[in-house]
Amino acid sequence: MKTALVLGLLLLGGFSLTAQALPLNASESAGKRLYREGVSSTGEPIMARVGAADMVLPATSLPCANCHGADGLGRPEGGVRPPDLSWSRLTSRHGQQQINGRSYPAYSEGALARAIQEGRDPGSNRLDPSMPRFVLSMNDQRNLTAYLKRLADDRDPGLTPDSLHLGTLLPGSGPLREEGATIAAVLRGCVARINEAGGIHGRQLRLTIVDPGPDRDSAEAALDYLIEQEQVFALIAPLAPALDPDLAPRLEEAGIPLIGPLSLQGSVQASPQIFEPLPGLREQMIALADYAGSSLRVLQGPTLITFADEPGQRLAAQNLRQYLEEHGWQKVRQQAYDPARDELPLGSRSVFYLGSSSGFSQLAERLRTAGQVPYLFAASNQVAGDLLQMPSDFSRRVFLAYPFVPSDWTLAGREALTRLREHQGLGGQHAVLQVGAFSSMMLLSEGMKQAGRDASREKLVTALEGLHDFDTGLTPLISFGPGRRLGLSGAHIVTVDLPDQRFYLVAPYKPIAAMP
Image (cartoon, rainbow, N blue to C red; front, side, top):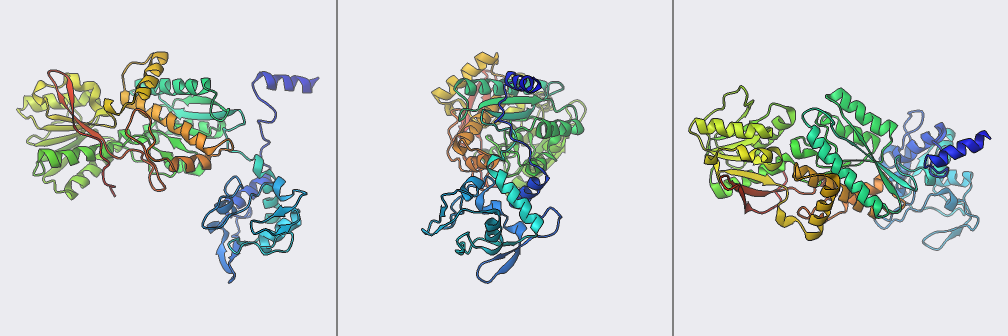
């Protein structure tokens, strides 16, 4: 009776018994670490002999997963085709056949140990010379064998045959609550649209949104909750600036991919796990500088970089100053600026602004009152909401960087975003964040489709890395690569006719050169 009740509760809760794999035991977990990292359960170094000369190398430099993959399926590389290591294939009663045509019997535990340590298959044929021969203790071999028996069922957290669990961190209160609510609405709308269309490879998407709280400690706790308690498969378009110093290392430690425009506000998050669909603040300011230097001829200065006194903006200001000085700009100054109390240095021909929206019009008004009307440069996502308050004296002297402009929008892209806005009750507020979240979900969907039904985090990262000229319908074409995690590296440059509130494109999107 008790068993029937438990089964009934599981079914009512929407779970199937096959969807929930049993957790790895201690031996299997130790074998998994050995397989993926080349590390013994005792912490002792494991060595391997390679090639005909028996060159001895640490196993950490050539763990099993390097060639056979985290899923054990093996992928051809450099003329070598590592075999599938699934236990069902290895122990098949029908025997095996190598690519070169040699046949051999099914593997047993002893035969597997001989192959791993001596490089011979069950038929005593020598394995490919590229196969390392690992020096393992009996306990290490036992652990590795135990894990190989579970390898086919060991799936990344957040992924079941029927569901894909995503997570994000979005503020529900504080100064970024409106931005958080906007991103949440877009993500929920995208999830609903994908699920209504049948999901991805039959999997329905589930999204968990957690408020990162007011500070670094609360943000770290929220991230840990998503990773350890909710066990999400990937993160999508989070907005948690307090995490900036710790996010990339934590993701790499947990092996979790993240897709989202993290660098829009100034922080730089370089990590193989992070894919950004939009240019960061650094790239947008460099695009502005390139336009100003080539078209406005202002290199002689003086030039002022003013920024909100917080880490992300300060870093962006430092990067911009370095770039300007390396590209012939003269008399460049930078100064943290609080429009409520700080005096601004006067006499600049060009002013680059990094900060909040309201501070932009206050800065312009203070300059106008002092009889100063320099060129003003800013990223649209930081200041667009304040343009109506700008003094008309700055008409066509304000230049903004936009990750996308209306001409980038295809009919299909425009219709998709319009439908989502209608369903979610959104207007055009925070348009850059909307498009960033929408594009992030498109990238996730495409990456998971390419990863296939037998998806994994590793396969998702590989699929995203291989995307080139991906069309979101709302942005310039997005491309990633082995050393490239920023899908767009430039910006459109737009000037504003303030009396008429009309925008004019003065320089279309062009990728900027890589910056050190």
